[in-house]
Length: 437
Image (cartoon, rainbow, N blue to C red; front, side):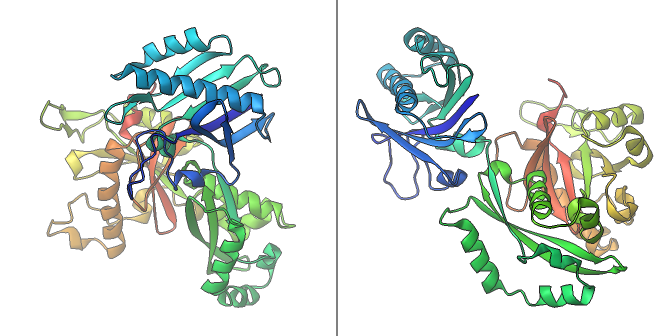
C-alpha cells in the first residue's frame, strides 16, 4: 500500500504581504512544521508548481517519491489549477470531479475533493484525493491526497509525530528511594531542560511544545508525591490531544527502561492510567426550541433511563456496569443545560463521581451572591465549565479551540478537553448529535 499526503504551492498565487497567507497555493510557516521529514518536488514541464510531501510511505515504510509519481501528482495539480483559473467563476465539486474523471481518467481514478475555496477571483478545491493507475510501482493499492488551501491543511492534516523529552536520561532512576528521586528532581534547572528540548528538535521546528506534569508516588509511602514534568515536541496538531500525548509518554517510558508497565503504574499512576471525567451535555433536549433569530433553551428535565443510554452510546471503553453505578446528573446555569457525568474506571482514589471531587458544587453564574459559598477550588472548576460549554456547543471536527483547551476524538465522538487539577475533563461536542446522523 502506497500513501502520499502533500501540499501544492503555486508561485503565482503566493502573497508576500506580511502576515498574509494566500487562500490557496501558499503554505504557512506553521503548516510546514507538520512533519519533520518533507520532500520537495518540481518538474520542468509543470511550471510554478511545487509538491511538498508530508507523508510518503510504501507498506508503512517512508519512501522517496520517484520522478514518475511526483510528475503524475504535479500534472493532476496543474490541470486543477488551469481548470479553475480558466473557469473564472464558481466551480462546484461535482463538476470538477466529472472533469477530472474525463481528463485524467487514463492515469487516475476514485477522485474525491473537499470544499471549494474562493480567493476573490479563483475558486479551487481545498483538497483532492485519488488513486493512481499508471505508475506500476504503486498501482496495486495507493491513495494520494493533496491540499491547495493552507487554512484547510492546517486544520485537516491528520498525521503527527511526537518526540518525548524526558526529565532525566536514565528513567530507571525513578525507582531509587524517595530521597534520591527528590534530589534528582530538585537538581533539574530550566536552562538544561531547554538544552535538551533544542537537542530533541534536531533542527526541525515544532508545531507545539507540550509540558505535562505527573506526580511521582513513593511506593512505600503513597502520601509522598513529587511533581515531575515531561516535555514533548509535536509535529502536526493532530497529535495535540490527551490520548496521543499520554500514549507517546507511556510508550517512550516502556521502551527506554527495564521496568514493566505494572511497576511504572505504582510510581506514576496518573500517567499510566487515564484520570478523567466525561461530561455529556444533553444537547438535543430543549424546553424552548431554536428560532431563526433566537437561540433555544435546553431542558433540565430528563428521562434518566434515556439519558443513561445516550451516555453509554457516546462513551468509549467504560464498562456499562461502572456507568450505571457512578453516573450523575448535574444542572448548569448556561441555557438551563443538564449534563451527565461519570469518571474513568482507572481514576485513582476511586474518584468516579464529580460529587466526590466537588461536593459543594452549586449550579450558579459567577455573578450570583451565593457563588462565594463554594470553595475556591470548586469556583475555579465552575469557571472552567462556563468556558468549556460554549466551545463544545459550537466546535466541529476541524475548528480550533481556545488556548488551554484541546480536542480528542474517540470512536468518532468528538470531545473538548480541559485539565483542571489532576483530572482531565472531556465534554462531548454538540456536533456529535444526534448520534449516527
